[in-house]
Structure formats: C-alpha cells, structure tokens
Image (cartoon, rainbow over all chains, first blue to last red; front, top):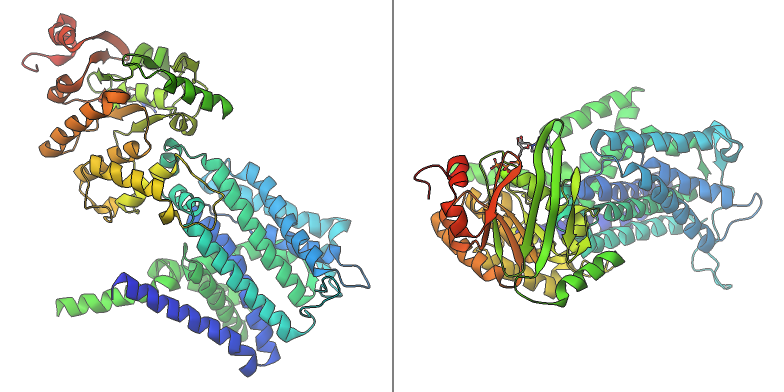
Length: 326
Length: 266
Ligand SMILES: Nc1ncnc2c1ncn2[C@@H]1O[C@H](COP(=O)(O)OP(=O)(O)OP(=O)(O)O)[C@@H](O)[C@H]1O
Ligand SMILES: [Mg+2]
C-alpha cells in the first residue's frame, strides 16, 4: 500500500469510528452512552496533552491541573439555585485553564527533560491542594454542579444540556471540532515549528526561532483545550472533586497518549477508548485493576512502539516482508 | 527586537565591498582554566571570504560559537554593522542575518530534505499566527527552500529523509539550511569535511558566488579549497591568533609554516 492509500484507509477508519459514535445512542443503553461521552471528553483531554508530549516533545506530568481548573470554574461560577449561562461559563472555564497554563508555562518551560516532568507535576500538586485544602474548593468531597449551564442566547435556546442525548452530541461535536482545529494547527507554520522543536530545539534556535515563545504558546493552547475537556467533564457528571487535578489523572491521560501512540491525534482518541475499555474490563475482574493496567502499559511500550495507531503499519510491514522473502 | 531591526537596516545601508560587517573585538572564552580563545580579533567584510585556520583544538569552533551566539564570550565584544550585539542570543543573531553551519551535522534527521530547508526559510517570515494556513502553501518560503536545495547540490532529493542520507549528503544539507535562511554573514564550520571531491569542488564554486554580497567566515582543513577562495586568512594556535593577512603572506609566513602548515603541506 502506498502512503496515499494508507492515509485514505486511515481516513475511512476515522469516519467509521465517527459514524459508530454518532449512531451509538440508538443502540447503546443510557449507561453506556454516558460512558462513551466520558471517553470522548477524555479523548479531547488526551489530544490536548499530545500537542505537548507527541508534537512539541514536552512531557508534562501535570496536565490534569488545567482540566481540573476549568472543571472547578464551572462549579464555582454556577449559582446555588440557578444554572449559569453557557456562553459565559464556557469561555470563563477555558480562559481560567489557559491563564493558569500561561503563568505556569512561564516557569516550567525554563526547565528541560526530567526537571520539566518534575516541575509540571509540582505545579499540578499545588493546584490540587488549593482545591483540596482551602475553603475555595469544598475539600476532598468536591462541589456539586446543581444545574447544567443554560444555552439560552438572546432569548433563544439552541439546545438543552439537561437532555442526555443533546449533551452527548455536543460532546461529539466538541471532539470533532478540537480534532479538526488541531489538525489544521499542526500543518500550519506554527505547528511545523513545534515539531521542529521536538526534533532539534537547538537547531531551531540557531535558525532564528524564539523557541521559548513557541513552547509557551503551545503550553497555553494545550491548557485551554484541556480546559474544554474539563468543562465538558464537569457538565457531564454534575460535580467536581480535587481528584480531577490529581497526579493519577495526569498519569492516566499520559498513558492514553502513550497507548494510542504519541504524535498522532487519532492515536490519542484511540488511546482514550483503549484505556477506559481496559479499565472497565479489569475493574470487573479485580479491585487491583491498576496493576493489570500497569502491565499493559509496560507491554505496550516494549512491544508496540508507536502505540495502537502504528499497529496497522507495523502489521502491514511484517506481512509484506514475509511475502517478499517467500 | 526594535534594536535588532535597526541593525539590519544599518548593515544593509551601504552595499560597498570591503565594508566591515561583523567585527570581533578581543574575544576571550575560558572553559575552567583553559582559554579556548584569547583576545581574538576578526573582521568580516562584505564581498570577502575570511578563512580561519588552525590545528585541532586551536579554538576555531569556539570562535564561531561566540560569533553565532551559541556560546557567550567570557570577555570581548561583537559588532554587527557597528552595533554591539554581544548580548544577543543565537536566535536573535540568526534573525539579524548571521547564519552558521555546524562542524557536527546538526539537522532534523526525521524530516525530509525539503522540510529541513523549509523550516530554515520559514524563519525569515514565520507568520505563526496563521494557524489555519497550510505551511506548504507559503510559496515564498517554499521557493527559497527549493533554491537553497539546488544551490547546495541536492536537487532531486527533496523528499529524502535527512537521517537516511549519506554523510556527504547530510553535509550538503547542513549548508542548504544556512543558505535557506538567506543570511548575509555566513559562519561555516568545516563545510567540506566529509564531502566527496565532486561536491567539494561544487561547494567551492558556490562559496565564490556567495561571497559577492555577503561576508563569510570559513573554517576549513582543505588547504587547496582555502587558498582557492580566501581573501584573508587568520591562523589560530592554542586559542590565540598567530597571524592574519592575505593568502600570500600566510603561505610564506615562517611562523605559520612551523606552527601549523608543516613541510610539504602547501
Ligand atoms: N564546551 C566545552 N567545554 C570545555 N572545553 C571545550 C568546550 N568546547 C571546546 N573546548 C575546548 O576548547 C578547545 C578548542 O576547541 P574547538 O572545538 O574550538 O577547537 P577547533 O579549532 O574547532 O578544533 P577542530 O579542528 O578539532 O574542530 C579544545 O581544547 C576543546 O577541548
Ligand atoms: Mg572545530
């Protein structure tokens, strides 16, 4: 198969997955529909992290901070007995996440490698304790979002997030939008610079690129998109807890990216499906599902370089290679 | 940035051959107790190729690293078009027109030849805010990249993945990338090392053409090439300048003969 056929097959696969996701509520129960919605939100979260890890070469272990900050923004901006307006609370949540990422980025992007991993984690832990241990965040129990945001704009209500089906399709729409947006960004001059930084940051500098600014822009953008995911998560489940910002959450989303294959947006989506699928499967069998999950991740890293998204190409290579030899 | 832009304008103001573009004043760089460069003075003039010679470990690459901004000098000043640019970093110096190639090939191995040069060319007009424009549709950038690929002798190899090419081809790519940035001061660290003789000859021809409206500093061990293109030669030994002058003077210098060139070398 030549590269154009390969990308065509990949495109057909993506459209088939999308069709499946769109059709799912017709066949699946309400319980599973909500679970798919959860996976789609986490897929957005994973794509936002992949922008950093896979495309810019910045391994952040604190990405849950921006997810959680946006989720808390929803909870804190929702009045006790009224819904908040969607068109206010959504930009607010995303902006809060982006601002946090910008200011944290100013510090963490001065470090590299293992130090970067450590300081992103440290800042996320600080954010975690702000919501866990101060009056702001409602402690370890978190806060209920009693009312889902109201989509009314100028007296007109285009959709109702209290309707599970409508909420589901809003989530699908958000996933498609973020996927399309990132696809465009990655082939833009800006995106090419990010991939150049991943490959050889020193050379990018000697070519004249102020790499720090590019990395800061990427970090802020990734934070904002994690905020989109955090917003949707809070709306979907109607409550927020400090766990959203915990290092478990940061680790889980990193595992989704690795499982799906770094540097591949479709892979991040696939990784979210695989991770939650395995989590459900394993937690049915045993309380110690994390042990099994750890094993899967180790096996994936060792035997499946490039993750799930690279699997078809690798299989193809083996098949073609055998045919060539025989 | 504003300061950097005025430097560009000043450097571009008077296109006179022989005008001093880049000046190094008493550059010194110490690594612990070792003075890799000590009071090195150099002047690069527009339209001239200045060769920097010296045995291994003489401090040639260290000198280029200071001029390109990769390494801050311990002492001394660097002027471009009369402006002090000692405080500028590597990226800023590149943007004001100082381009360099590396002795150890420094490319994007996973990218195609075209993408390597396209990124180099894109740095002249980066347009990062055009988030929805396909980078492959920036035609000015593409054109510049393709021209640089042809000049460096890599025509027809645009789609090759850089890391899979031969060592010599990667050396050519290294040069193509500096050319794609359209720098007017070129700092070339052993560009011919590792190239085949045909490519070397082509590169010497290229250098001759390039120096017309640029200032070039060439570090090179290939003496035939150096004497074929250099207008001025500076010889360094142990971090200090031993002698500097026109090729004839260097060729006949007794000091240089004993210290570096040895017998039968020239
Ligand atoms: N980053 C560094 N840290 C410590 N010492 C260094 C460093 N870079 C260079 N040196 C030392 O400085 C001296 C000059 O090195 P440099 O690379 O500039 O020499 P050169 O003239 O380019 O040699 P060559 O012809 O081998 O490329 C050498 O003794 C080298 O070991
Ligand atoms: Mg050297």
